[in-house]
Length: 215
Image (cartoon, rainbow, N blue to C red; front, side):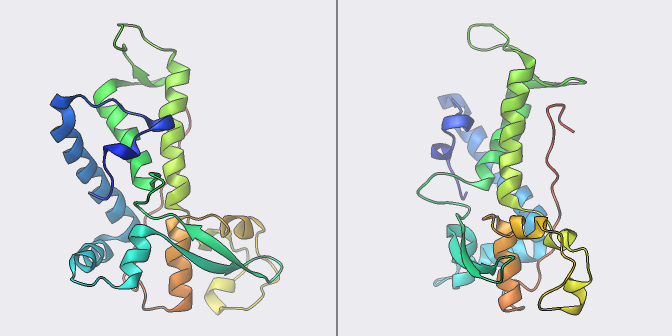
């Protein structure tokens, strides 16, 4: 596992009883693998895991796991630093934790209804307001999506990415807002821009944010 129970605090706090520890750890492993294969593709996921298990992992695998700083060019042509916090870190904030929280809550504490996810009862046999509960689990999923990232090529309104133009005249300004976010997508994308053989077998699958109805 990249993360453990210590990542589930603050807005994604979970109370795991002793009888659930093994089940929860297995669930973390399952969701981590599913999310990373979705993000990397199986080929790169396999290379990533094997790379970390090597005696001396290459820096690119450590950057992906532990985080790193990299530079991008903003809309004014200035080089600025951006930070990817990593899949695991001392801040105990991880893309993986947000997704694990969301799917664990859905699996173990909610019922899927036409109105969204609903927690039946709490320890006092009291059901919280459905809308407030949905906001919490949906917010966790969407925060995971923020760190997961989006396909930057969707932000081009020209053929910049095809022709490799230095300064395209028609680029959606949202592109420049997006590249300043420290997402995993951005880190890998710009690593490949700097050297195409850094993560050459990357097969990205997009994840869309969801609304309070879970769609």
